[in-house]
Image (cartoon, rainbow, N blue to C red; front, side, top):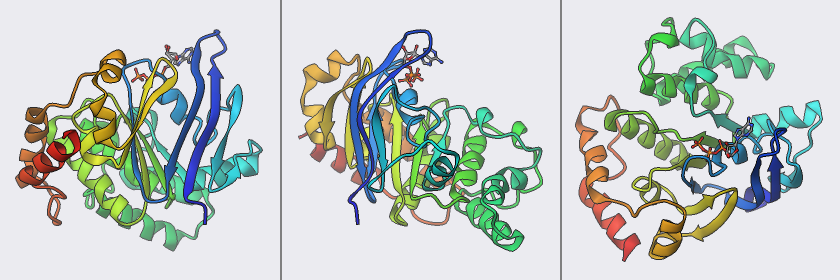
Length: 280
Ligand SMILES: Nc1ncnc2c1ncn2[C@@H]1O[C@H](COP(=O)(O)OP(=O)(O)OP(=O)(O)O)[C@@H](O)[C@H]1O
């Protein structure tokens, strides 16, 4: 079994207008990891993510999925998209059906599964994201957090090995952000490899096993959160700041009114301890 479930090898990407968005990126996630890609706006996070299931083809370099080079033929792309699910930054780019259940069913139906299997997957996915009972509702009227959860359900229903989420908490209030993070924690506990891009330096160290810092199309630092954040010059050089406990606490304090049954993965005390250890 290949430990590196996904890998970008020396990826360069230049947009048709000549913008050099990625300048030789090496990145990988190991099976079962939560990896954060941290960087300021315009650093290249979305561009890199669009390479992970072949939406963009690199100008040079290659993407390896489970030890095999991504192949850009129609059948190769179908295979890649079953293994790697991408949740876009803006859920309106992902949701299109008039009903929640139709939206979530779209991926598995395209995979050619039976109606019974699709129905079961839709129910299971909606249950995981806390949206059971919303099947017939139009997603376009939902809050940002609810839309995001429906978009994630659509990916869960395809049962990918790897879920890639572009800024999953941006634009959400602390409660919405907390729900998404708990959901990702639960999916990871079940074995899914999770890759998250964010510019939120407070959340990245708390939820990730490993962090990459991207700046101007290049990876400038990688390692455990404690290693990455101990190099203050590099963090500042990437136009990022150091994590702040206060923001974290604000997010974690919302735990009581969450519509989930399982306990929150971390109490505030645990979060503080974890963060303190990582920054020691
Ligand atoms: N379609 C496009 N055509 C040309 N240039 C683009 C296009 N999309 C992005 N870029 C440029 O590529 C670079 C990387 O952008 P990208 O969106 O990948 O960054 P990002 O880190 O995801 O930022 P954000 O958090 O703002 O989305 C930026 O200079 C951006 O202006």
